[in-house]
Each structure stands twice: as structure tokens, then as C-alpha cells.
Image (tube, rainbow, N blue to C red):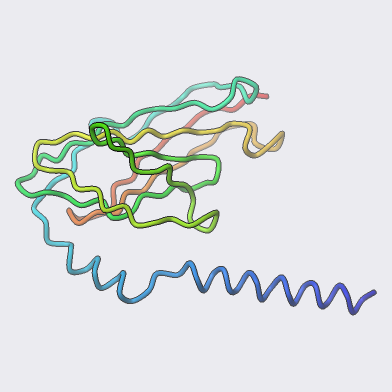
Amino acid sequence: MNKNIITSIVVGAVIFAGIVWIARPDAKDQEAAAVQQNSSGVLSIEDQGFDFGTISMAAGPVTHAFVIKNTGADPVNISKMYTSCMCTVAVLQKGDKKFGPYGMPGHGFIPKMNAQIDPGEEVSVNVTFDPAAHGPAGVGSIQRAVILENNAGENVELQISANVKP
């Protein structure tokens, strides 16, 4: 029986290492990101944080829309969007077109987005938090983030928070 347990642990470790290896950024992605870091576009967000207040697990998911505007002279390309936890998903809405939903890296494939925001254009990022995702252990104060990788400089980080009750 000990041999079966050890074999299971070794197989699990190999599978985990394979997942980590596949999810790592490759050199081409990093090089492309470095080349794209020369836009004079500027992403402006009126409020980068939103507090849902006290919410109930039983009431289900809650959503907030963040408005992002390109106030610069050049288009800005959003190359990736992802969340800090599996309980949170984000969708970028540009007119009638939707990009997403995008979740947490490591909990599914996070594809490249390639959404261009032209000068003066506004988009919304709709962030949905599921308070029941962590089960009974998920009560209390939470803070989550949505990260947008772009070519206008530093990544944009949107924050949500809540106090989760059963």
C-alpha cells in the first residue's frame, strides 16, 4: 500500500510540474511585450477600486463595470487580462464586441486578447465575483484584482473588495 501512495505522489508531482512548465511565459511573449511598450496611449480609469460592501453567499454572484478610456494620442493594445482568483472573472466590452470571460492563470487557459482601444475610446471591464466559490470557508473580507497587460506602460490593476456573509 505504501508503494501505491508513493507512486501516486510522484505522478501528481510530475503532472503539477508539467502544468507549471506549460503555463510559464515564453521568451517570444516577453520579447514581443518589450517591443510593444512604446505606445503614447494612456489608459485612464476613474475608479480603480470598487467595494461591494456586505454580500451574501446565498444571493449569488455580483458584478461591477469599470470604465477605461484611452486619453493618449495613440491606440493602446490590451494583450492579456486575468484575475487574481478563480472566484472572479472579467469580460472586456468594446461596443458590441466582448472579450472573455477571463479568469485566473493556472485554472484554465488564458488566451491572448489583442483588444485595441483607440484614442478617445472607452471600454468597460465587467468584473464578476462569486461569493460562494470558496464554500463555507470563504466568509469574511476579500480583495481581488483584475490585471490588464497593455502596451501603454505598466499593467492596469482593477481592485474589488467585499465582506462575504453566509
